[in-house]
Length: 215
Image (cartoon, rainbow, N blue to C red; front, side, top):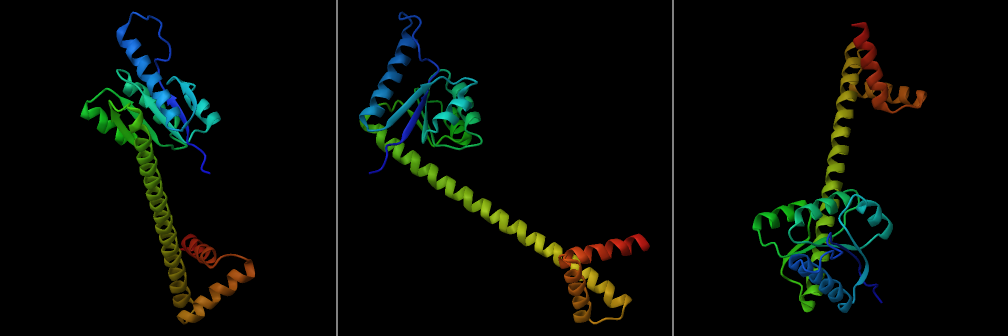
């Protein structure tokens, strides 16, 4: 049986200091509804944390599968803390907010948010939203890994081509100075490399360096 997703909710308004403050009270009720909805949907809510300077350390300890940012007026500040805290160990981030500013939504997605949900705290919506966010995150991670692998291959190919240029220059020098054929010049480089327990390109580079010093 698949283990339920381990989720951490980030909310800076965890405490209601003034019950007469309608805005703060409303935000607290939103947060409470979200946590109840997560539990009713079968998720493992491991913690509710403030977006503060200790967030990186706390996330490293808890190792959640997903992070939910529940924020309203301070959405951008909370998101910045979460993005910084997950910079070295990426995780899917879902943002629930009442902020319907399209500019903020675009900025959130650009920062790495997998889903930006406005006024979407209905319990029946939570699971499909998180499922889609997780699928999107996994797809993006696969693309990043593929891109990284391609870059590595290109770097390796570039290094091989560079080594070949060095060897070709050394061969050309031996052919000119010692009147050798191309095959004989390469054989000389290879024998020297075997005798000195070096790579052929290392022998070739040393020959070129000595030639430059003597020229």
